[in-house]
Image 1 (cartoon, rainbow, N blue to C red):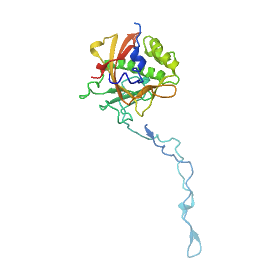
Image 2: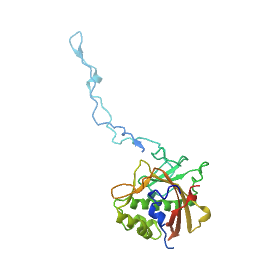
Image 3: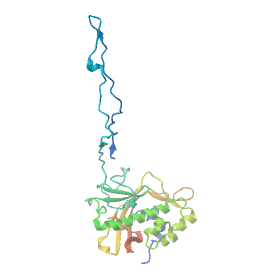
Image 4: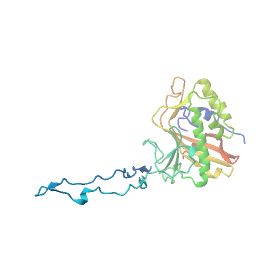
Length: 284
């Protein structure tokens, strides 16, 4: 793992996690409606009369009487709409995983060239699901429909963790999102991460205009109906900072490549994170 002893990064690979991995017990745009008649009667159209040679005034009988009009129709015509077609990716993960887009506003982001979806599971934390495998990057693999429930649980755990370590100040006890996403309800995280952060005034933050990018895939050989292994060759730009906002490492850089192995278990009909830790094989 390149530079891991010198760098403290945010996410599931922060220093405390490496030291003690968490483990559990078993527009359409509408145009304005066409306006209807306002009910005013037509004004009689009469031309100015002119005297005849004999001095009498001659008028057109038809023009001398008001022109009757039909009463206005009280029924409004149907509202017209203009359909607007926008490019939107297919959503494969649940709504609670956050908004989904087909691109992120970081053109320098590595490892996400293949078309796919980006779920913002927490602010500037993007979970990337490609539509196709990449011939150039074996870490980029399109999930099968049966993978999606597991990957959703993994993304939920990542987002929950960020919601606590990026908080200011970090609370020592696991928040509701963490309790819901981890098999042990976040007790190991509280002991190894949250409490030390709270006691030392530490928290995670972004020091660059760059996000955290997660690229999870299922290790099919190590997974079953009740246990699953997720390998994630991720790119991290967050860092752990002290009370004065200074990073704990002087060698931080955006898009730090980090390999992570996460284990999930099926309990009570849902997938939950049970353990995780660094794994260099996650980045082939």
